[in-house]
Image 1 (cartoon, rainbow, N blue to C red):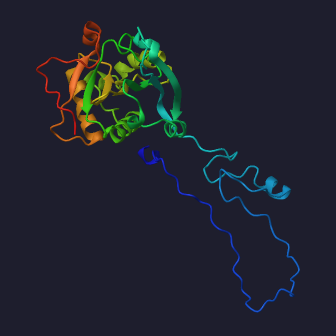
Image 2 (tube, rainbow, N blue to C red; image 1 turned 135 degrees about the vertical axis):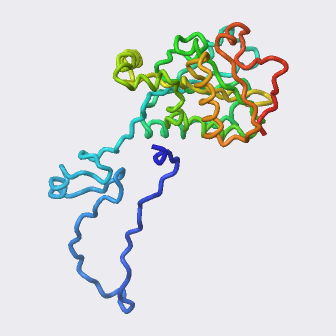
Length: 290
């Protein structure tokens, strides 16, 4: 699937020019126009007009992308995801409830729909301070601590110096959407693949609505602040130490983080207690990633 994640496409429009084979032709010499066949489509997205006979001949012929009716081939994702946006608090504007500032942008369930949305989102570096992007699984009704799927979990937190968030945020989003965290499971999850665990898996997928079990990763956020940018990766189970470590190591790998990078973990229950997503004990090393 990773091979499809590209924000660049190579143009397939080629110049159709006819070389001039005669150098002695003068303006007074006129050649009778010859009958020309209709030109074949040069792109699967932009077709030239075909004659009636060719339309009939090509009606049931598969297109270059494998779709019999000529429509673009869609590459579905394993899960449906939703982008959210939390508006910044402008001068004189006070938001008394965190949820009041969260706005849904759009949902996507295929690689094509993801890129059509992603290319229209401004990078974090262009956002004003106190602004958040949130990407969460469609089964999560609201991207907040109190959501039933988020409540028993927590988040890994990475603090970034200003100016480096754009690449890391894109790499993280691609890793989550591209299912790079699928192996972050516990032994109990792996046992569910056996016949004895099949029932539990069916119950889980029926609640999901995506036709599959819930992923361990609930979502991720980037919080643009005045002096730093903060990335957080939310997972479902705070109590499972093994799963949390697998998530942590996967984050290091997909973001290519140095070994000395400081990563903090905070449960959503702790966040509910102190009313803060990113506040950590004072003795925690908070050196931001350079």
